[in-house]
Image 1 (cartoon, helix red, strand yellow):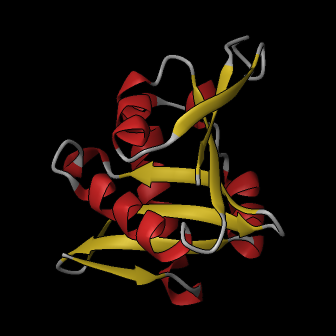
Image 2 (cartoon, rainbow, N blue to C red):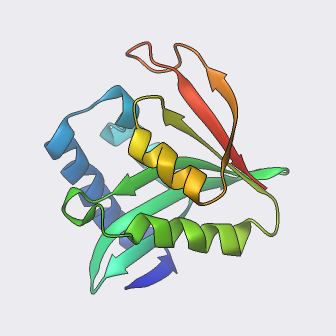
Amino acid sequence: MRIETLSSPHKPAMRSLVEAIHAEQGLLPQFYWPKELLGAEMATAEAVGIFEDEVLVGFVLYRVLPEAFEISLVASHPQYRRRGYMEKLFAHLVDAKGQERELWLEVHEENVPAQKLYEKLGFKEVRRRPRYYKDGATAILYSHS
């Protein structure tokens, strides 16, 4: 297992991982990343990924803001879930970036496993955005300082 900063050569693997998620669950409101949105986000955000051998098993996209790092996308390969990869990746982010400024993210209210992971790593709920997602669900905003 290794964690590294992702760049242009990694984009095909990132796209494939998102396609694997869509193949498993469809284009759900809690993970709504069609190709055009994903391409735009990958073009403007920073990325860090976690690998098992040469397989990208998870990645996080984030933006550098003056007051925080805003996490815009968290993607975990369906075949590698529940093995601790994302916990290790987030712990790395907290260690590497959390010393500089806050980390922000939002999560669909029905994504309880993600909420539990974020809370385990010290993220705190700071706000809710009712009817934020296309399905009318609430977005829960978390911060780690």
